[in-house]
Length: 112
Image 1 (cartoon, helix red, strand yellow):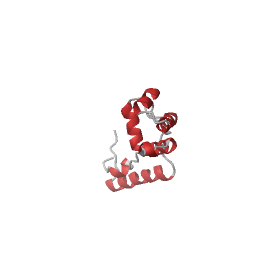
Image 2: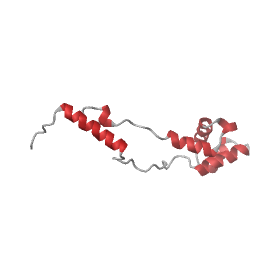
Image 3: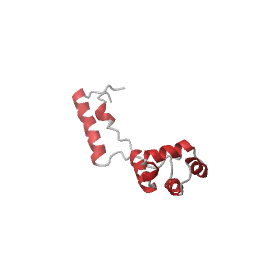
Image 4: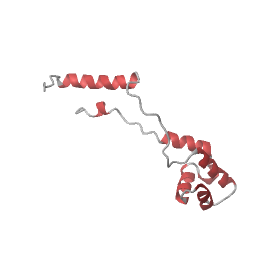
């Protein structure tokens, strides 16, 4: 095996170059985003909205959706409460909140 003859300064430059290429030109494409199989769908959120308008209890709504009442209660609380809950807005917010931006590991860790 031939030992690597790259100096530490050069290695840092290569690391930064890789990070720049991956972010500016598209380099490493992230996988296509999709919902987790257990997350609430837009249809379920619309059913929650209909249940709230009809003044149904959280337990009734949960039974209709085959979900735990705590899931429905947290969903309603997270997105404005019973008075202001809107399915489309809650769905959009949940989708946006699912993003977890992570910094480039090559920049964060010089050991890499």
